[in-house]
Length: 251
Image (cartoon, rainbow, N blue to C red):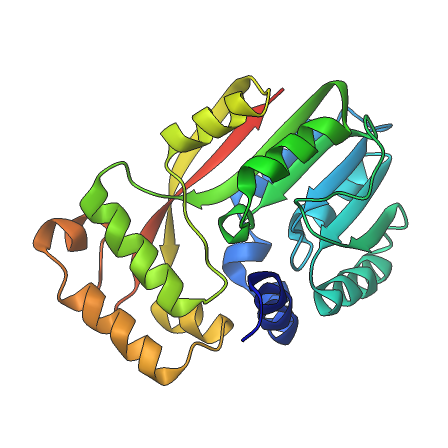
């Protein structure tokens, strides 16, 4: 069997195009907020951890000095490089590697950012320490991810359907867990924004090419979940549902 790292690279390499065109990933007020936050930093060096299809990198690049799009998947990075060239983003470069061992010198970046990636990381605390190491004094961190409810019942159902849908899933963290991990890594949490993220079920499983057996298992879990779970995630008849998402800024 593949290692977790190998599985992440393999799975996302195979679905790179789907993530480039995904409405969930290519759009959102969070991308606009990140662009606004970076707009006045025309000299800033930005690192996009677990860049995936590169949407955060594309949003940041027009406003900063340089962006490094960093990911495990060579296929994703090739697509990001091609798309950046098409968009005329000549200050964007790509680099392959693990978030737990960053190949950059200490104090190399003004901003470290990540979007919808951290729930795949096996050693998130180590990755956060690495993010702090490569940040310059006074540098900033911006992370966006889906997050887990504080309630154990809701949390259990969320982790179950996430793992069935995508074998590279590790964990969605609650906001309380995020604050604790960031503090442990030496960050001070600043601005924070949460919202509800609607997911079309067919597109959600199709994007990851989830096997039919697992799709049916997810549908069964959602449709037969306790009433309070169905109400919390706004589960529809077609199994579409809504997740919590958070943008956290830290320094």
